[in-house]
Length: 304
Image (cartoon, rainbow, N blue to C red; front, side):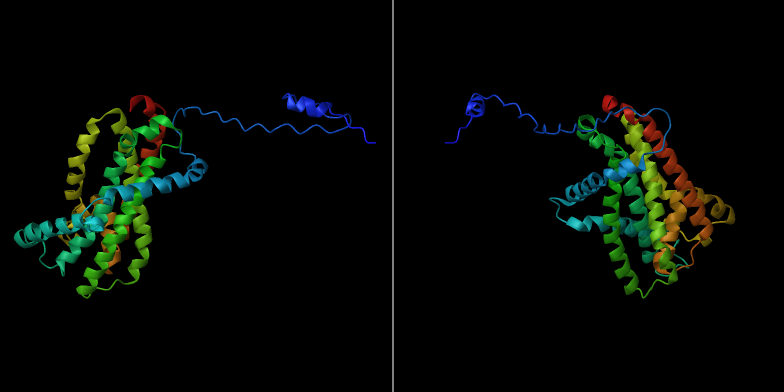
């Protein structure tokens, strides 16, 4: 006859956990999750690149969301990516090219202007959307924690998407005029990268300023328009500018980068002086914008 002890079953039935038998090993204690303490960043500091990399999926999905929202329930759809540079090209060709005579001596002036407008649209669109991105994502900023720089950086993805579509149309127009890019096309990735760096840097700086002073939001609208006309490489050849202007205009980061984009796309000789100076100024603006953003981001949730 086998004798069993029914006491543990009775204890279990009453909801009591029986003690382990003598000599039996106790179950290992559950590991506690790591404690993460979030403290505001004080002083001037560059962003934590490793932290930004951990939130790369958030950056991707924010960019994807913005692309979907921009073209959702629109009649033209992706056509809006080329509508702005095409319309501006038509205005420049009609009033500056025909009436003011700036097209004299320029072969294929419509193509000349459209190539410049493709680059400028990428630059101006990134500045504008990045500048208003933090205020537009107020709910995210006040509800959860993540690196705030992810928000303005994600707007670059939307501009890149538009740039790809507009560049496709630019290639079609160039081929219709019989223009084929040369070896200078190899500089295109560098030019696009510096366009993204410079425009995102200016946008990040304005995003931080707009959170605290909403006046910058209204200045931004016509400020970008004035900036476009202050970038004559869009609609004028460098030969029409004097040597003094060619020396100092690259201090405008959009000038040298727009010029290099057109030269790279249409097979012209790249002005390395203008590209170098504009790239350096754009990089300085990007560092300054990120530093200021990091300086004031701890107050975003309270101010916004």
